[in-house]
Amino acid sequence: MADDSISPTDIATELLAGRADAWDHACELPSGVVRALGARGLLSAEVPRTLGGLGFTSQANGELTAHIGAICGSTRSVMTSQGIAAWALQRFGTDAQREEYLPQLSAGETMCVAFSEANAGSDLTGVRTTISQADECALVQGEKVWVTGAHYARWILVFGHCSKGAALAIVPASSPGVQIERVNNPLGCRAAGHAHVRFDGVRLASEEILGGRPLPSSLLISALLTYGRISVAWGCLGMLRACLAASARHAATRTTFGKPISEHQLIRRHIAELYVAERSLTAACERASRLWDEKSPEHVCAAVLAKYMGGRYAARGASTGLQILASAAAQDGNIVARAYRDAKLMEIIEGSNEISQLMLADEAMAVWA
Amino acid sequence: MTTGKELQVSSHRVEVSLLEFIQRRTKLRLGVDSDIFATGAVTSLFALELVLQVEQAFGVVIDSDDLNLENFSSVKAIASLVDRLQGAHQNEYTHG
Image (cartoon, each protein chain N blue to C red):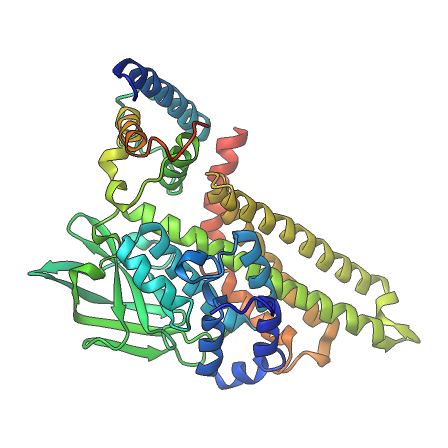
C-alpha cells in the first residue's frame, strides 16, 4: 500500500506518462499498470486509512483525478468506476463487507459497477436485472451493457431489482454464469475495458448483497451517481487542461503570416475561451468537492452542475484545441485527438447533457422561482 | 440521561427544522404526518438530499439498516428515527 515518500500524483505520472496513446491504440491498459495504481491506493483514494486506503478528501482525490485525466482518459474512467464501487461499500456496506473489500481495493484488486442495460440508460427505471433470494443464496439474472472497467475487474457490483426495492450484488467476475464481452471499437476511452456483461442464474451467498438488504432504488442510484459525477467532472477538467496546454504551446510556436498564431486575434479568442472554461470548471469542481467534504446536502446538485459543465467544456475544449492544432492533431496519437473522442462520451455517461439539464432546471426553479 | 420531556422538545425542533428544509427545497408546505414522497413533487435527487440533511443537521449516521422509505415517509417518521439514533449514539455527536 501507500508509500508516503512519493506523492500519488508523481506515482501516477511515472506509471502513465507517455504511454496513453499506445494503450488507446491497443484498446488495453497493461494489467500490471492497473494493479500498480490500485496497490498504491490511487484507484479509490477516498477509502479511509483505517481500511488501507489513502484517506483522501474529495478535493484531494479530485486533484488526483484531474491529473490522471489529463494523461489518460481510459485510466481515469477505471478510476471513476472503482471509486464508485468503493463509495458504495463505504456508504451502504456492512462492517464485514467494508473490512473484507476496501483493503483489497487499496491493494491492487479491482471492482467495477454495472448499472446500464440495453433498455435502461438515462431511465434506470427500465432496469430488468433481478437479484432474488433462493434458499440461502442470492440469484442474479440479467444483462448489463457498457460496464466500464469490466474487462479488468475481479468483482462486478451489479444493480438490480429485488422483491422489496433495489439491491447491489457483489459478483466475482469469474463466477459460473458470468459472461464478459468487450465492446468492440469504442469511440473513446478505448482502453477503459468497457464490456457487456451477462449474468445467467449467477448464485451468490446472501452475504454478498451490499448492506445485507434491499434499499430504495432512487437513493442507491443518486448516491452512487453523485460520486461518479464529481469524479467525471474532475476527469473532464484534466482533459480540458491538457487541451489548453497543448493549444497554448502550439500557438506560441506555430508561425503563419510571419508571426506565431498566438498573435492572431481569432486564435486568441479560442485561447481565451479555453482559459475561461478551465477556470470555470475548476471552480465548479472545487465547490462540489468542498460541499461533499462538508457533508452538505448541497453537494448533490453541485455534482450535477460540475459534471454537466465538465462534459460540455471538455467536449467543446477538445474541439477548439483541434481547431488550433489543426493538422498537428488530426490523427490518433496525441492528447487532443484522444480528448476529442473521450470527452464526447462524458456528455453521455453519469447523466447525459439532457438529463443533467432537467435536473439543473429543477434546481433553478427551486431556488429562483 | 435524557428525560421524556426533553426528547419531546428535541423531536419538535427536528420536525420544525425538517419542514423548513422541505419547504425551502421543494416549495411544499407539508404537515408532520404528510407522506413526503406521495406528493410526486419531489425530484429524483431529493431523497438523497433529505438523508444528507438529516445526517448533517442532527449529527446522526443513517446506515443501510435504516435507509428505508418507511423511516423517511413523513416528517414525524424521520423525527422518530433521529430520536432513536441520537439515543443510540448519545456521546458521539454534538448538536448542530
